[in-house]
Amino acid sequence: MNKNQARVITLLSLIALLLGFLITNRAWVRLDLTRNKAYTISEVSRNLHREISDQVKITYFVSDKLRQSYPQAGEIADLIREYAAHSRGKIRFVQKDPAREELLREVEELGMVPQQIQVVEKNELTVAVVYSGILIEYLDRESVLPLAFSLDTLEYDLSSRIRALIRNVEKEVGVIVGDAHKQWGSEFTLFQQELILSGFRIRLINPGDEIPAGLKALFVFGGSEDLDLYQQYRIDHYILGGGNVFFAVDGVVVDTRGSFDSKPVHDKGLLAMLTNYGAMVSRVLVLDQTALNLRFQTVNQRGSAIQIVRYPQWFGVQSQGGNPNHSVTSRFQGLDLYWASPVQLSPPPGVKGEILLNSTNQAWLMTSQMISNPTQMNLFMIDAEATRGRKSLGVSLSGIFPSAFEGQKKPVLEGDENPLPDPPTERKASRLIVIGDSDFAGNMMRINRGEEKALDFLIRAAEWLCDDDDIVAIRGREGPTLRLDRIVDPDKKDAAMTFSRTINTIVIPLIILLAGLFIVWRRRTITAKEKGNSGDI
Image 1: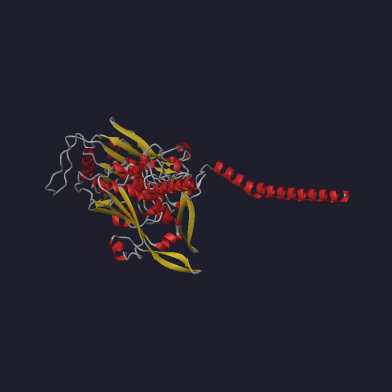
Image 2: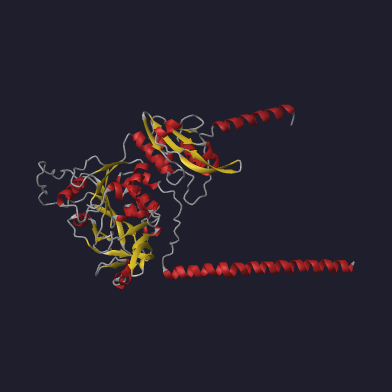
């Protein structure tokens, strides 16, 4: 090869490198070996560019100290870059440090809250104030993720917000708290916060008020003993007009304020209305061997004491208890339920029904008498042998529903000058979810650290009710649950523990001992051979 040929090859190589660098935004390759593909965006997200007519700008406000100290910031930036790489120029990614670019006031006005983290600087542990938030802009509209610290639901947050911006629609859900003794602002604060963080606007509706026909989804919590026929008619009218509803209702009421007395609900018609739609909530309790911890106080002559027991009327629905073929439970991580009742599926003609949640096959019912006091747990097994088996705990229904007030007169509210509207002449398809427990959606979800699972399930349900099935499918990059309760059968659990003890206390030490003996024997053999060879010489 002469000098001219070498120069040409060198020049062509440099040109090839330059061209490769220029197309890196168009050509994106990533090898993702994680089980849930946590570092790869889904097909739905990759194809968002088809809906975008103008450019979407995503700005990641992240402090340099956070980026240098924690790898999660780099993972977040990489995921957003993947959006831009697949967007064919429709999504632009910008990363800024609010402190370095003097944007602290602007990011706080956007709702991004500073966080404190520990960092090591010059061999000293110090506390740094950092930001990690995302601003999405499209035309004159914008959406903000005030906190972004992991990949857990980041793709869902980004894709759902981008879609809402480009379609110029606001995600809104209504809420009716049917139990008279509960308040939305105090009993459901965790769910309220999660709805806001997920980009939903909340409309609180008083029982009996008109439900806007344009409202996409409605949550009804409780109300079996409190919602009267007038209030039920409002919900029925909303469903017939195409409204989608999540019902979390109780078949048994428990006095949680002291005595733990329990009794079947005195239904004012709500449970009968659900039966008309195809979901019968039985007025009995489900108990399961996946019992959760209950902490309670006892008082005797020697004073008071705190006890912690495994309480089977509180139990965890396992990940394998979710329906993998339904978008709401396709990546189901489990759910904690409190005094739940079974839900039997019997959809009317033209309505499709699916079971969402199941107990284990070792669950049983309490039917003959309701006893919930933890000091009487010896009575919990009365009906166990006769009722043991898998129980349905939640169902979904979709289709055109028959009215629960068919052939009946419209309820009248005394003193109300505005009569209820007639049933809609043209009925539309609706979606319903019915869960036989209202407590799981309240602040009780944090008792056994089950809030992440409960909130994930509720947000998935909200998206499904809003007809965003493909968005539901990409939510849930969470890792597996950290609770060590996957094996629930007592015999299998004992066998697994015995196997683990045998491996760790006998097999592994024996292998190490044999390996040591082999190494010693090997060395002695080599030494003996070397001495023999030196003696021959």
